[in-house]
Figure: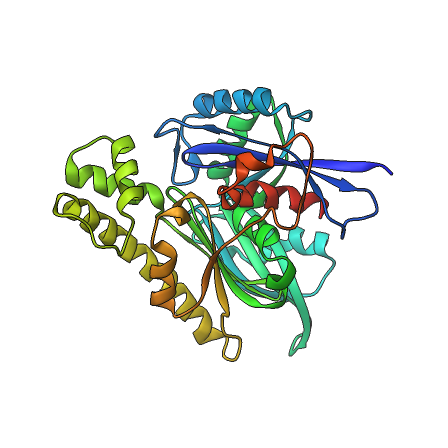
Length: 352
């Protein structure tokens, strides 16, 4: 039986990561196979707040990644997601989806903080109902500033690759993690990257709230480096040694305070997102929180979030629903499963 392969590409603040999934034709509900995965680090400053600012540096890292991981195809599904990408719930009069998407510039121009000429628009339908004005589509409007997407696409093209599709990181996170038992529950997915945190509330596999927060693990590292007057690499080691919420020796008190201050602000923003959702969705309470992303590995962070939200918190494992191909060394990903969520979810977007 023929198969389809799709590569999802995540351009993060500290790394570029790509995952190639193989789907058997005619079996989209079956279990795909992870046939290749790779990542290459990026120097500080090449990507800032989820947007490429040094295209050639990122393109060079992508070329290294393609050689190291031996990806066959140069076509990728590219993820985007930062403060310049707006996602909001929106009800629209029903029409076939291609027509609905084509009509977006005329229907949403008064809702945007930017000109529709400067925006890339998309719509993610979640349900339908008969409203006062007739048949109505309920869903999520996605509006991204054109230049923030173009910057990432140019880096991809500079590496000799082609973005066949640009997708929202938040939706990729949902596809990668809200599977199995989580697909039947109301869960909060929290992906903590280096400088951007994506929060997605999923109700039985359907996104109900998406929020992007401008903070992540790198902000914690920077605070420690500033407090101690040390380099970022050394601050990263100290941060992961002391964690958050643990008793520390006197020599680490300044670092612990720096970690606590930044982490407290991030956790409060995440908790406020949960409160906002609960206030607008009575009777559909969040049942659990699933963490992914490099920032989620800070010792004590899960317990801190659980205490603040009064919800059980676990680490997500996007590999749990995948077969692992012979070309992937599974042991090399042990403990790093949550880092694979975005590229895996991006690949799911085309073929799943």
